[in-house]
Every structure is written in C-alpha cells, then in structure tokens.
Image 1 (tube, rainbow, N blue to C red):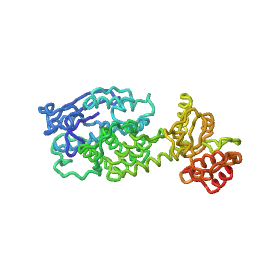
Image 2: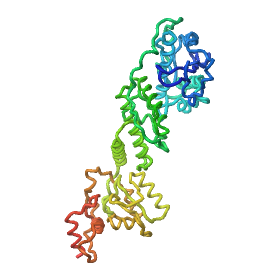
Image 3: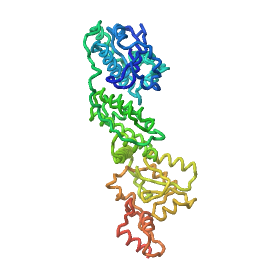
Amino acid sequence: MLDVETTGLSPRSDRVIEVGVVLLDGNGQREHEWTSRINPQGPVGATHIHGITDADVAHAPTFEQLAPHLAGLLHGRALVAHNARFDSSFMRYEFGRANWSWPIVPTLCTLEASWHYMPHLDRRRLVDCCWAAGVNLDGGHSALVDARATAELLGHFLNSAFPPAPLKEHRAILGQATRVPWPTLAGTGRIADPAAPPKPPSRVSHHYAPPLRVASLLETFSLSDALDDGASEASLPYLELLTEALEDGELNGQERAALGEVAELYELGTDGVDRAHRGFMRALARAAIEDGKITRAERRELHAMARLLGQPISTVKDLLDGEEEARLASLSTGLAPLPDIWAHGEPLRVGQRIAFTGCDDAERDLLEQAASQAGVRVLNNVSRRTALLVTDGSFQGGKAEAAAQLGTRLVTPQDFATMLRHIQPHQAPSTRDEPVHSAATQSPAPAKLAPTDHRAAPGVVRTWAIANGYSVGARGRLSREIWEAHKAATA
C-alpha cells in the first residue's frame, strides 16, 4: 500500500512531502510499515489540507536520499493506492528527479475497484469507501494512516465473505509483481525531466461567479449520475476534485490549475473535460428537478455553476426543461385510463399546476403531498397557467379573486381527491393547449345562466365554458363557438 502527501496536484511541478508504505503478505496480513516526511526543497503548499508545515520538513531527508530505501521496500510488490494514478505519477517523477528509473508496476486502484465492490456509493473518496466498508479512518491525510486504511479496504474487497466476489485479476496481481525487475542503483536513466516545459493543460474555463451561500445540490450530487449523463469513467477523479472545489461556490486560480493538472494526468483532453462538465451539469439539473419544483436558490446555484464552467446560462433552462419532461414522462407511464363513467370534466394531468385556498389543514397537507408525488405542481399563487384552484369555499382571498378574474376552474377537495386517483398522462407542450375530450369527459349540455351583458370578461366566459364541457386551451383560448354559445346561454 502506498500513499503520498504532496505540495500540489501536478507531478511535474509539485513535490512529495510525505510517503507512507504498508507491506502485506500473500494472505493480506501486515508485514511492515514505513513512513517519512520529505524535504521538498521548496514551499510545502496547502498546509490546511495535509497538515504539514515548512518547519516539519526543514530537517527531513530529500527524496533523492530516500529513493534507495523506497526501491528496496517496493521491489517485488504490487502498487495499491486509492486513486493510484496520482500516487504512481508522483513516484515516477520523484524517482526520475533522483536519477532512478520507475518500472511498470502492476497496480490496483481501490478508487476504480470500488465501482465493482461498492456500486451503490454516491462519492468515492477514501473516507467514503472506508465508511461503507466499516474501516476506521482517523487522521485522514496522513500518508501512513491513509495507507493503512487502503490496506484494510483492499482486504474488504478481496474477502470472499462479502459480495460481490473478488475479481480474478485482483487476486493475480501479486504474482505479476514478483516478476518485475527493479533498479538497484541510481544512474539508470531519468524518466522524467523536471526542467522540461509542461504541456498545456486541458481546458478549464476561467469564468467567475459570486460565491454561493449554500451548495444544496452538490450535497446530493452523485458521481454515478454524471456517468449516466455522458461523463467518462476516466473523468471520475476530475469530477471528484471539481465537486470538492465547488463546495464553496467558487473556483480560485489554484483550484483551476489543479483541475487542469488532473485533466492532463488522466489524459481527458478538451473533449473529455467538456463531457465531464456536461454530465456534471445534467446530474445537478436532475437533482434540482427531482422533487418537482425548482427553488430560486437551486436555480441561482445552477446558473453559478454554468458560469464557473464556462457554459451559457441558457444551458440551464434547456437542461431543466429536458429533465422535467423526462420526469413527467416517467410519472405518466402505466397510468390507468379514466373510468367509463366520469362526471368531473377535464381530468387532472401529470405536470399541471394547481393551487389551494381554504380547506382543512390536515386534509390539505395530505392532498398537497399526494399531488406532488403524482407529478402535479402545487403553487402558492393563481396564474393563467394554473389548471385548478382547490377550495372548500371557506375563504375568499387573493387566490379566489385571481381565479375569478382568470376563469380558473374551481374544484372541491373531495373532487380533487377523486381526480388525483384517476390522474392522466402528461401532455407534451405541442398538444397541451388543445386537450381532447372523450365522451366520458363531456359534461351535460350547456346550462342556462341568468341574462348578462354579452360583452362578458374572458375569465367569466372561460369559467362558463369549462363548467359546460367545452375545450378551452391552457392559455385561455376561447373559440368563436364558445363566445356564441355563451351569448346564447345568457341571452
């Protein structure tokens, strides 16, 4: 097991400041441990992350001094680490600076292996995997502590008592390692030239957005969701770092540089980074739309994330619209048709907007909860897009006044409960304006009303038309036929 603490995230320009090694035998039992601080011959970097100060390494040996001992420890061993490419890349560069070659070592990454052994996890940091495996990880970000935890995590993965069964290639890795030749002396050829100019990092857009107050969507973000939405498995370490960096709602220069280095380390390229960003944004949009309503805070957060990742703000609306349509289509699947006898006019549909006024508090709470679960949006106001106002007539406030002015359909809580039990599939926007009435949904012939002014307000006519079974568009469209029928009924 190997773990390193470093001054930064670039193997080319940053240095190892602590290394921890745990050696296991063929049965997974601990044979030996070793750790050392290392003088990087420069600043130690982010002390707040690894806890190591300049004073801690001032009198520590350099990596060049430790290279012979490390080579002896690792000879004949497979390399196991959490995010192994990171650790092995740093070791390769550090050995190269010390004029030692780094062989092609059989490697097992517990981060990548976690997708087989722990497919249910949302996050896959070492602390997340250890928690799922019941492995104690106190004092994380100490190289030896992390190496010990990784060793226990590997033992959990390879224990046949826990499903799923260990992969054969994971069990065979030790035999492969014993056949790898290791150098015994320096001067066997540099494999990394620290003086060489670095390659340009993969693109990470440098857009600024004000810090967010609450990262609510990131708290529920799942890496597997990003994979489902097009991000590649190779981008998982990048997405993990991106998620951590964005938890405070901003990306500073150091974080952007680190993301570029990780993108380069994992050879994502511009296309891979773009795919990771798109998958990330889609996963956040799905988290926002999951409960059927998008708060202003969630929308602000999505806008901020889009700006930080260099994506147009219009992308957010497109993502939310797409996720909402997919959610409504899913909720519409398998709904039963209306009963043969139906006396409640236009049925309630998945995706429609409703409001409540008055009503018993307990009854209202139950109906609101059931409506939200069925895919009906419960709003606090009445607008032209409100399909129904549920009321028992006990309160005549602003919602009732708006409903009267707009001609919004009124239903009792009892009727709404019936409509909810027989909710019908969502109608796509292209057809939603002209709902089709089946014979079962037609109301009786138009009722005569008291004589009134033939220049009635559209809201009044719309209320009359809905009550009498006419097809009225969701945007309040009133056909000439409706106006003439209303005129005749009120003459």
